[in-house]
Length: 167
Image 1 (cartoon, rainbow, N blue to C red):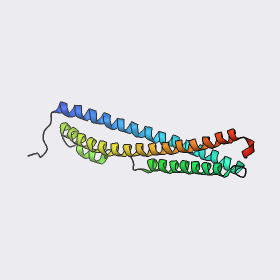
Image 2: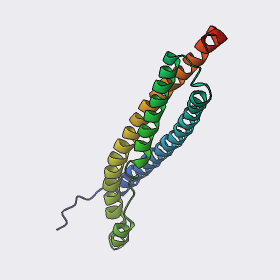
Image 3: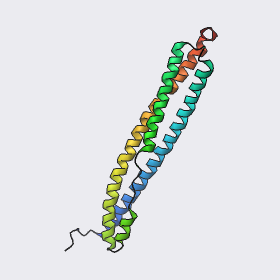
Image 4: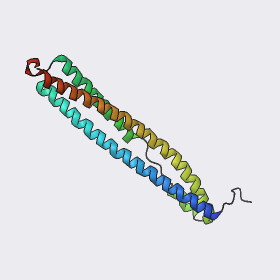
């Protein structure tokens, strides 16, 4: 007596197809998040280099509060980099264990497909949670870049408006 219920083969095929597409969509979403993270890291690095240039070349003539604004902007960008590294460091996207699939070759196709549906459901749950966590980190990282860029631009605008008399 088999402990697993028997399913309609057409239903199993339809559900399996949907689950496969959902898992592929989650993989694409994860790739998008990782690409966006790389962009964030690049932008943060460029803006940090700009702040470093401003402080190194003009630090001795800049007003103290402008230096403070630039340092806070640099800290914001540095935090953005750290948060982005959490996205990259996060556990890998889960995949099907192919060793288990080899064992399934001995079973009936509908039974194998039924098991695959359960496996896809489990993977989809884990991977969706992982991608959602990564999206949250990217969101925070983006906010930190915006704050850092705002501070840099604000200090440059102030220096432009104030003119050479404040340098």
